[in-house]
Length: 194
Image 1 (cartoon, one colour):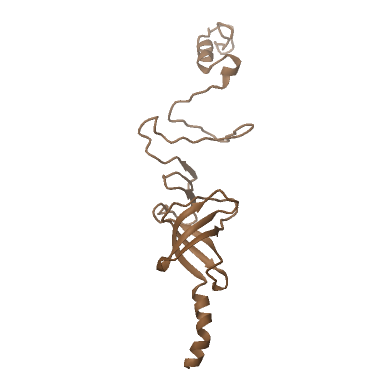
Image 2 (cartoon, rainbow, N blue to C red):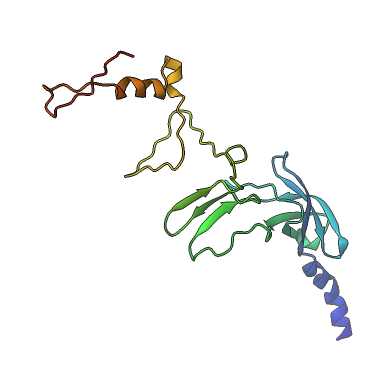
């Protein structure tokens, strides 16, 4: 039996070295395949492990995030990081079937049972420190909805390239006169031209 255990010992070590758990120490996000430095159990440090991410998703994990690494054939000189998680910032309490993407600042896109919630996070105590969301589109942004509600001010700079502003248009069209010959007793003809 002792001889059998001695024969199996190298294979047992190989199996034991296949997977390792650790924490992220540093990240190189500039390369085509992101690389991470991991601190594994027993104070083992591994540099430049390729961090495999799902197609279409990428992140730059913060130091201290937890990681799982795999080493081919149990060879600790050649490994990859295939999962990074961070319990410090994980969203909790999602309902069955929900999903979200999020970061460490509380920003998130949450696909809830009731609809999609986009949250800029942060502490919007004043306009100066409120988080900003930027929607970029080369041609246009289209919204298809029965009702569009805005709880704050709307600033429109679109007409300025034509020498007009929303304020100027409001002054022009809010100052219209009513004519008796109109079918409904009023018309929207402006009293002055733009």
